[in-house]
Image (tube, helix red, strand yellow):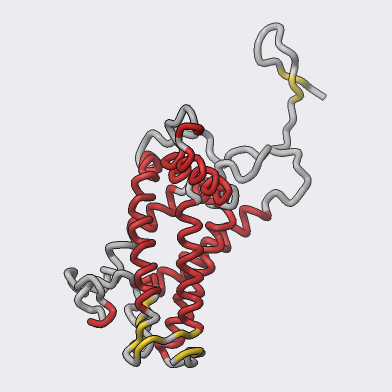
Length: 267
């Protein structure tokens, strides 16, 4: 076996021609990520620009993909905050929330790891060479926008409040108080969205950062401990919320389109 030395007197290293010595299926995780994220983005893009089947009048169900509905194409009852944007095809009904949610997800520490490895091969796995000859870091366009994650977190918190409001309104249909399977799905989605949002690393730093003595700030220490427990599950919550968002949207679309009726428990 031939060897190479990096500098005089340094210990020689083996000259290995293979790109990696890993014999396990290291490519499987990046492949699953490509399929999962690619499928979700495709579904979400189609739904956002479908401009239909987002509101169930009988039960006031509004899909989170169209909330808040702010174009003049919106059904009046679904526009809880007014319609102040033109209804051009290229403008989604939720033009206020979608850019910030996309920024929040794109700059999320877990998602950055996921798509860096899966889509950019940078690197595709541990002990596997980077797919690029050089890496300029996150100091130049467009990756410099990764530093906006904290500000995107604030926007995501506001949007989570709006989604919570939508879930509450869905209990009050034109017939009065009502409760059905759609309400369960909406509330479950909101709970998961809050869990994902506050499990964010930025939230953990905001709650407990810059403190030298936790003993002097017991409330912040309790909050930091709670957020830290969620933070351990940040990756799982990132995927779960993609699932709950798609499920919520699909269910409301199906009921709105008349594919099946909502299962009602009360009224």
